[in-house]
Structure formats: C-alpha cells, structure tokens
Length: 319
Ligand code: 13P
Ligand code: SF4
Image 1 (cartoon, rainbow, N blue to C red):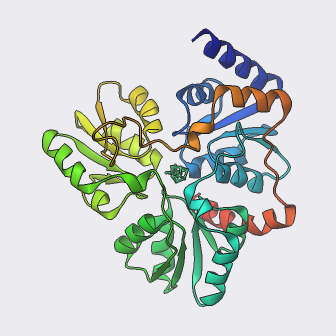
Image 2 (cartoon, helix red, strand yellow):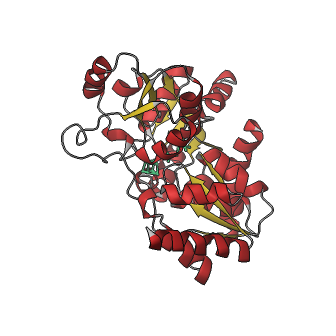
C-alpha cells in the first residue's frame, strides 16, 4: 500500500515535470485510471482516447491501454512523444489479423469498402478505407450501406455479425475474436438472469451472439458506463472486461454490479474476464516510461500518413 502510494506520487510528479498527459482505457489498473482523472488526463473508450490525445496540447502523451491505442495516438499526432507503460501490451484481434494475409484478403475483393476495427496494427489500417470503434461502427456501416457500398470487415467476427444484423449491410468478415469477450457464455447468463430478475444486462459487442441476444444495452465501454449511471435498475450484469467495474463503481456506488459468467468464473476463477494485455499496465511501468523515456511508440512516418486517412475519416464522421 505504501509502495503503491509512493509510486502514484512519483508518477504524478513526473507527469507534471514532463508536461505529459495520461490517457487511460477503462480496463487498466484502477490506480492508473484515478491518476489520469486527477491529473487532467482522460479515462475513456478507444474512440475518445484517440480524440483526446489528438486534441490535447501536451507534447507527451502517456497511453495506458494496449498497443493499437498508442499507435493510433502516434498516427494522429506524429510530432508528439507517445509513451506506453508496456509496449508489449497487444490484443488478440490485432494478433489475429496479420498484415500480409489481410492485404491478400483485400486484394481478392477490390469491389468492397474496407472497414477495420481500431484493434488492428498501423499496417492493417493503412489498407483500410475506414476505421471504426465499437461506439461508431453501427453508424458508419449504416451510412456506407445506405450508399450501396459492400463491406469487407475485419477483424472481430462478433462485432461484425452484430453490425451486420443491425444494418443488413453486405459484409464479408475476417474471423477474429477478443479472447476476453469470446468467453462469455449465453447459457450461464440465462441462469444468472433468473437469479437476478431485476438486473439489466449490459454487453460489449465483441461478445458472442447468445450473449448479445440477452442484452438490454449493447455498446462500447463508454456506453456501458453511461447505462449504469442512467438506467433505473438496482443491479446490472456486465459482459465486458472487469477492469470496467472500477469506474462503474465510482460513478454509481449504489448499484450492484455482477460479472457476466465465463466458462471459468462460474466455478472457480473470479477474474477470467480480464484482458492479460490491459493488465500489463501498472504504476511501475508508468513511472519507468516517464523517468527513462522507455516505451516510446514509433511508427514509420509514411505508413502513419497512410493509416491516418481511415482514422481521420472516422473522427470526421463522429465529430
Ligand atoms: P472500446 O472502444 O469499447 O473501449 O473497446 C476497446 C476494446 O479493446 C474492447 O475490448
Ligand atoms: Fe483486445 Fe479483447 Fe484485450 Fe480489448 S479486451 S484489448 S479486444 S484482447
């Protein structure tokens, strides 16, 4: 506890000395989220992290999240220094969509508009027409569908299926998944709902269809937080990474929050629903990157300029 507080103080001091701002995702360690809010940074979903980092005047951004979030920040602000507590923090969606295979997929379907999820590498984004996050995917694909465009979608198959069902768009899908959300189980969720009949069910759209089908609200991490704050219900069953509970509990201290069941957490494992890569972000890593300048995100400038097009298009659409 003492060590934790000392590290937090040191990080606060370094952020000030380096005139850096901390941009954190809801899934990272609660101390990092608190520190971001206390020091004028932000805690948000991946869309707002990108926008906040781009618009903030600080010349050093510290991105506490996973690699694609740091890369998006660097692509949007190539002149800024972008640091991460751990550069090895990746994402199963990014890992499951290698550039060469994805490029070949695009080459095979030149008639399709390429829409990629934010959770991809800079090189994959460089092949895309649009980038989307879970908070704007529905609106952007609806817009493209209304224009008669056929879509090539990558990499999350669950989010893709959900968007396809909602919009009726013609979508050819890559077969990727998030290792965290893919574990939520529809059958066990039904049982938990029977035990908690007043609970509202909040689901991130990276979850399987059987889970999404039981949702009262399907949305990005920011949308799920808003639902906990605004919906008039005493209990919520939440199907997303359990790092999210930190902010939810702060924002709605009187509500009861239950983890949606995964294969493991129904019996023994109480924290299966936590992204191992988000968990790589800690106070020590934050202090180290600020103290030594380690964890700097570098993107080849030409690649960055190409990848920027699809990110800019999304930010322009959602402005
Ligand atoms: P959000 O954009 O909803 O924050 O999701 C990012 C993510 O990685 C979810 O697993
Ligand atoms: Fe990727 Fe899933 Fe982790 Fe989000 S929770 S960063 S989608 S592996």
